[in-house]
Image (cartoon, rainbow, N blue to C red; front, side, top):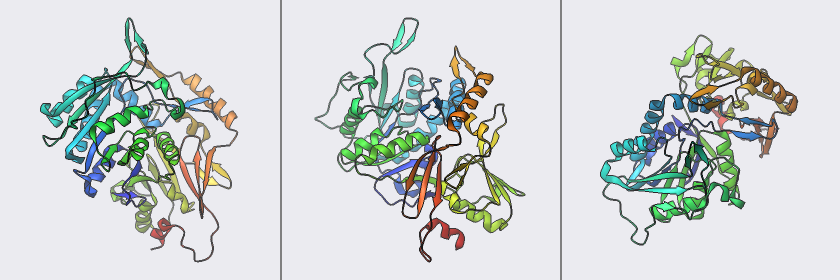
Length: 432
């Protein structure tokens, strides 16, 4: 595996599965380099993260994130095992004097604390902080309300040194709430107040320290870390989260490149003229290079969970790209990837493309409800509202444009160039 684009900065923003990203960072020399790592991942409440689309007047989702949310809710052992893997890698990434700050809620917090005790050791538990995120009960069940979340602080080793002048109460009711964002509000559902992250960074790190946030959401930690002169590496597996973080960093004059983990061509994925990925690492131009060397210029069908947008640099119509999507039954589905054409996208399966990106249902009384008739009506209404206008944003660069569709997928469209001009390093991978 490698990181794409090439990365040599002291700060970095990554899109993709954080377990794969952390494992690759470990391989690339970041073991023992982080002063603090902040985990603020899903709480396994059954709440499906979504964002509101003005174009569709609908809540939209990342299809596999929605599927995993439902799976984990009904199979909490999977949720805890997933977290254990990430906690174990985080420990390797921390410096001997480093700290893990683990943000969770009352539903799974006690289970996750046991895992933290097992991985870090009970003696490395530094303390528990309760953050009051609302002034009154927000989530109500009978007479039991909820208006707090919990942070567990763990040292990697005995080498941790407490800042002598810093000692806070274990109940933080002076930070602000989800409703107090005011000017900093991006309307990202799980956005944390900047003051919360400022305090965490102030308690656990010094200027110049490297910090990590591998569930970065709207990007509050990289934003605040940048303001407080900390180096940072952040990631998320939501396209909308990454795009929100990029926009927030741009307010500081930072044009953040988004990096992804990619992998070599794998002959085991190839069956006759079909290449089906088993990993969630996106299919890229780098992988296409190996495939072309193996097969030459023959018709080929690619099935992958995700794609890097550099594949659009090669306008090879003999290659068909399909997304692997969660199936309506146990079997996964295949949906063609839209293709840049003219000034817009050619979407060969518009109904399916919308269907998989709409929020499907909700959990009520430990049952997951999806009204298929209503879903089909919502898709049809969305198609009428769109009227073929799939592109939400276009960014122009010297020799190409990057298009973002209404679901956050990215595409690259190359522009005319002068003869002999070397404008796309990735393109040379195939030429060389």
